[in-house]
Amino acid sequence: MRKPETIILSHIAKRVMFFANQKVIEDSVTRLGISADDVVIEIGSGNGQALEEIKNHDPEKIYAVEISEEFRKVLQSRFKDENITIIGNDASDLSDLIPDKTVNKILLINVIYFLDPLDTYLEEFKRILKPDGVIFFSCRFRPVGGFDPKIFKNTDLEKILPSLRKYFSVSSEYVDPGEKRSRYHAIQLTNHEGG
Image 1 (cartoon, rainbow, N blue to C red):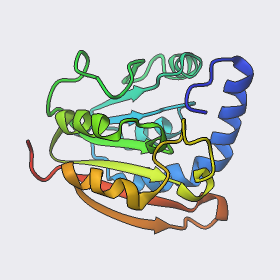
Image 2 (spheres, rainbow, N blue to C red):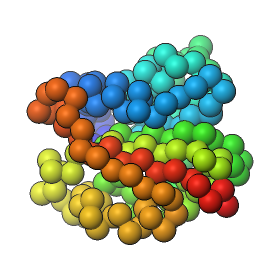
Image 3 (tube, rainbow, N blue to C red):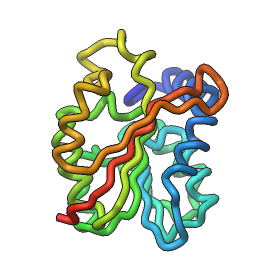
Image 4 (cartoon, rainbow, N blue to C red):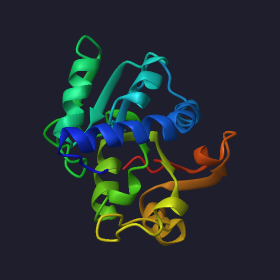
């Protein structure tokens, strides 16, 4: 699921993402509060579902960070004439592509589990985020709690909160958009320090 490398695995991952994520995506993008002058990054863009929602808010610039070559092909085909820059780098190091303090909003849907070590990613997000910029994590901790811990590293909210609080102001809530499979934890990080 993190990086499907075959067409079959990519197809399975796309189907799972589409049906399980639509309500979460709609709710998450709304909560992110994107405005027309924002620069927005989605980390782990997958098949581009959330990018479609982000586009509806007409931000100034959109970056899509996706490490799966199969998903990047889908994104390049789907958004070839759009104001979306597709990046294949791992999000732990975007220094050659995104300057310091240039991003207003970062969205990660069902991605936090794979960020290892988490602090490395948080430091990079801190670097690129403008003062008062926002990061929004949408997470379903319960379903992934029993998955392979070698792959799914961050599956317990209480265990990751101390790392998040080292870098950002943190708020969290459990959200029910109306369907059992769409319930998720919304974690919002705000860059109040600006440095």
